[in-house]
Image 1 (cartoon, rainbow, N blue to C red):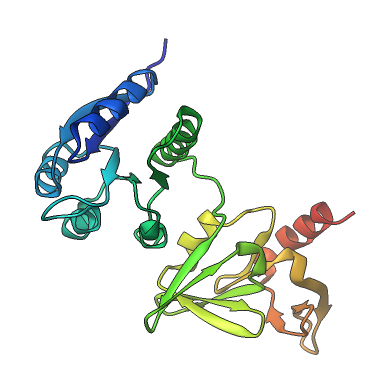
Image 2 (cartoon, helix red, strand yellow):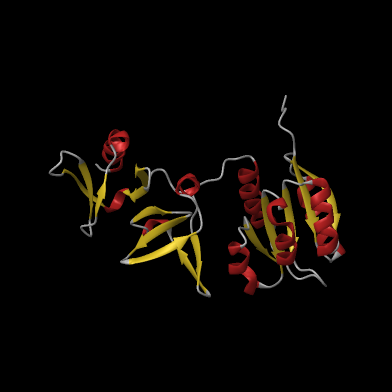
Length: 241
């Protein structure tokens, strides 16, 4: 007997037919339960605060208060997972900046909806896989990075500093948070303030003080803490033939 509670889901769209279509699709999934439907952004903010759904399918363009306004007003009260649903493709990057799980472009087929729903369920259930992109915002610019491009990461106060091809990008996330989202097969912590891309590690070397260093392919030298040394050695052995 399945004792896992259903994922409480809300639909927000100003078009009645669009809401009906989503309801019908979600009814076919035994893991979800539609707890509310809203026809406006203003209504959605109040309903989300009152019912605390796990997942929201959120239209972008709505009169008065659009989908992005909804999330901004909710702040920390935003649901665990948000899937934007819209007929306009120009908001995709902004949606991912807002940490959306997915961006469903109308009209979509059942298979595309199923992929978006699977991603959302994984996040709600706490089984989110590695990120396939990292978005960095700085000085009016948005940079989309592929994790494999990142050579190493260091802690910088409340930020993580990503080193990519001779450039650095500041991301307002702690190293611990970022480590949870990175592919464990590719990245390894080597110090409480540093993570390396295993593909960028050229060698481990003892320095003059008898301490180990990690030498990257671009000759960057990083301190290797004793507490992480065995883990790194094991991971390097597994990742290379």
